[in-house]
Image (cartoon, rainbow, N blue to C red):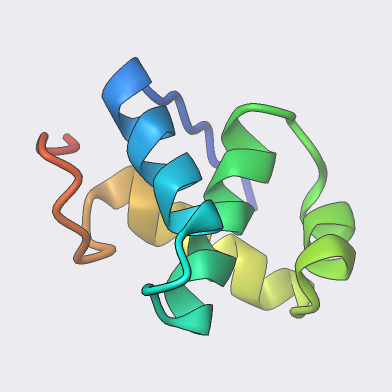
Length: 81
């Protein structure tokens, strides 16, 4: 499967970092934010992200694809196309 390319604008980075640090978001939301940030900003492989986030590579792939398609269901303040 082709590598999912994720490019974040500053607003998306800020919101994902906020979710990563916030104590009021669910563990799942925090984990998803971590997955997206590691892929987009640091360019880690799915296996490395999975190890760091404590999830399977398939889970990393799933959430990266959902985010890239704009179907992750978060209201970051801008629509992803």
